[in-house]
Length: 461
Ligand code: ATP
Image (cartoon, rainbow, N blue to C red):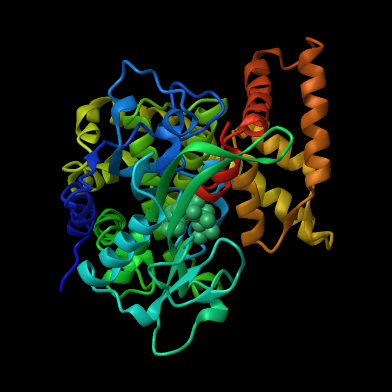
């Protein structure tokens, strides 16, 4: 059977909404920008919006409080705060900064047995995934065994290769044995004194990576080889005249073009969804995450595809909106704002990108001529302060030249610069930039939210 991405998503939703006797309510994804939760940078799991139900704090006058069973595909961004997959993006085949998390929930309704039975039935009978390629890690220990529907399950993994016993490869960061679905059974709360309290009601919280599931169903060894990403690759190729995408990873991607394809296709998704939900690139908090993502992407477009940046992302975005607009109608509602915000941000970076790159080259060549393998931290700071090069972007550029960044000296230069600006000294005009970067750090440290679904089991309340 063929499994185009849209059908995979629709099948998931319908499996639960039409479940006889356990009909789930389709409850739309929340915004990726969590307006009412300052501790969370971006929505990073399906359960975020249901936290009040697990904690028993939902306002009884809301329709949320009446939910017994729910299903949806949640828009997630993991690019900052406790949950940050940004540095893996482009390098591996299964982490994105933006992804969809398919989920089903029970709020004091069905529990383990039904949840496990349904996930097994959906994966094997409905989607037709071979049973001998599915593995489950149990909550109590790390033993990985074939799934038995009546046991307590936690994480479900799929072996992309098959025809072997892959149990020993589970949870080893093996890209061919990947975690697809996390089932969490919420029965306890971890109290302040770290004891476990039995909750008055038991809940189910599950999360399945949509792009990973699609790759399994389409029999691909990478999420990027599915129709979630190929329309974006085709468009990038059409826009740039670059060679075709060949799926090479790491050192095998000799010219770095495949990596650039992955980064750009990933980043346009994050930017488009975040901006459509009200995010704006800026110098602090969430906005600074978006700014870093856009600048990183713009520099890949420029250096790997020779693009004259200024409207790269806004030209690519409609391809994404065409694919995902039917399921996420909010994408279609702000296209004019989206274009304006993307172009403003890209143009403003274009003004400093080329001079910054020239300066970087000078610094890098100087370091190499002196036989150094590290880039001077003060130089890295100057690239940030004067040319708007986020530290992580300079780190990528350094890595491409076989250099690392002297992080300690970078931190020191940053701190010294803050001291000067706090004392009201020189560079006064740049004060906002500096203080705002502090804000980002504070926000990240304070992001006291469950890191993963299974952490949630013990961190509620
Ligand atoms: P991993 O260890 O593989 O990064 P995780 O333990 O962080 O995953 P969970 O927090 O349990 O993942 O999220 C539930 C599901 O969401 C995962 O099983 C996976 O399928 C998917 N997922 C998580 N992070 C990403 C990501 N960055 N990109 C794509 N899918 C993801």
